[in-house]
Image (cartoon, rainbow, N blue to C red; front, side, top):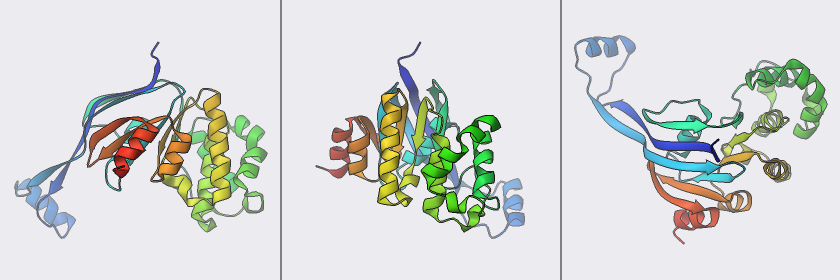
Length: 243
């Protein structure tokens, strides 16, 4: 059995970008049939390799557009790499995009069961934990309000509460927690620390070096799709910030 929760080997993701402007779909298909559309290759990620040990807390840091969130989506299985492999060992709870897995026309109550089903949780489990989910998300007064009327912070609170109601083996968290207020961020931090003490592997993307150093033990710095540094959270943040 592997000592790692996640193994990433030589992962690259390539896109073909059209060199010329096409004004409508009809023009695009005509030019494509005639072979008149030329493409530039763009690598969002290039030859990324790293491993995350079970029970570790691991950060992906980098500037906007560096490729860190794309790498997170590949680990979560949302995207497939152009080449390379990603192996994960254990159940994954992904918190990647604000509102992902929610129907904004449904109420908070309805979205709890919908999102739980998407994560593979049974209706019975969600019923048993419903009150705790609502209480943790601080949405008791809004449980029957359509999610489209929620603030971004309310959506983030509900998503985090649902994803962590059952201890996953791997928790993947993107920047979405940054939309919550300080008090809720502290609640999330305490819950993640408790989960890590129970063996959950946490993978975090954050722009906040303070959060990275407080939550994570190790990490990598990705810049323009390339792995620039790997090491402890302090070392990675120092390299990223040029310290």
